[in-house]
Amino acid sequence: MTASFEKTGTNNGVVTFSIDQETINKGLDKAFNRVKKNLNVPGFRKGKVSRSVFDKMYGEEVLYEEALNAILPEAYEAAISEVAIEPVAQPKIDIKSMDKGEEWVITADVVVKPEVKLGDYKNLEVSVDVDKEVSDEEVNARIERERNNLAELVLKEDAAEDGDTVVIDFVGSVDGVEFDGGKADNFSLELGSGQFIPGFEEQLVGHKAGETVDVNVTFPEEYQAEDLAGKPALFVTTIHEVKAKEVPELDDELAKDIDEEVASLDELKAKYKSELAKAKEAQYDEAVENAAIEKAVENAEIVELPEEMIHEEVHRAMNEFLGNMQQQGVSPEMYYQITGTTEEDLHAQYESDADARVRTGLVIEAIAAAEGFETTDEEIDKEISDLAEQYNMPKEQVESLLSKDMLKHDIAMKKAVDSITETAVVK
Image (cartoon, rainbow, N blue to C red; front, side, top):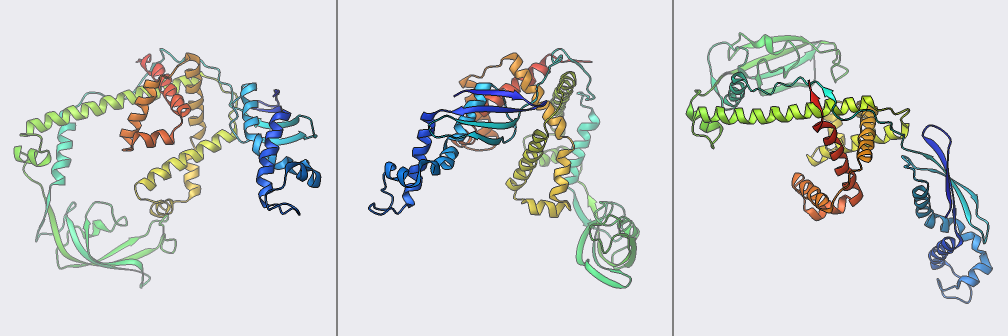
């Protein structure tokens, strides 16, 4: 095979390549073996006609298209490898010649990965806004959250206060007409939780069990039910019960209820302080990594990003997100319904920073190439084991899903990130 590449734009070009007669003949043989299965030729059983008879009756040219389909993918990949380019989209194929007995000549219009001119990416000065110190207030706040989780609701005769839970019936109407979804019985509502329309919960504060309250509110202009958006509504609300939150005493017994591995409140505080310190350390490391990578990307030069790469990144991110949702039992349709969004909304969300994500990926790949990172079989095996543990999958399943080249690429990318981060100087 002979192949050449002619650049026609910043990230565009034409690959011209030929397919030799030996390869063509193999393709014709494959095409003939597929076609003959359905042929009925007088004097031959179905599918048993010889190649020489077929060629005399129909001409081998009728096999050209099928033969090309069989051999083109491998020929194109060989041509790409020979001219040493990295296409980032499907090529536009054009057949220049398919003359009998001669090499076939094909051209492919391709979009290639853009060139990255690296700037400084080591010993970068970065600043991060993460305090690694853990204060007593933070430890106490976490214990207080856990304490509140163990709180019990106790009936009270006094008027409801902010933070209390009321059990209510309500009937909503607009202009005297009840509307769908505006009615419920024995509904538990924590006052101040913001669960209901703004203004609803506040009007129940100060009222006791047994009272009926006319709650007047106005639906927000952006309310999801368009027929109700912006309209005033009346909710006739009957309070059946008022319950106050009763939290347990802050002592050693509470500590043991929160975490059975500790024997005292002091032990719980020490454990939480250690956990918070580790979390802050991880947060700090992540902030340093992000800041260093961002600066390395700023220092690099990429003249122009192909739209095809941005488009591919948007769809990759969307598919990854929706795939994670489905693993949690939430289908795309259910997600859009729950969030009140559409596929177009999600597309726009990921499109907003797709350019930055693509640039970052290209720069990290260029650094990995510049550093000449190699990947050992031991590293690949460890990566497979780590992924299997992370996703709770058998190693064999991970190996079947990820090729060796994909794993090598990912490991090299991680090494590149480490080379940027480990040399960063935090100011």
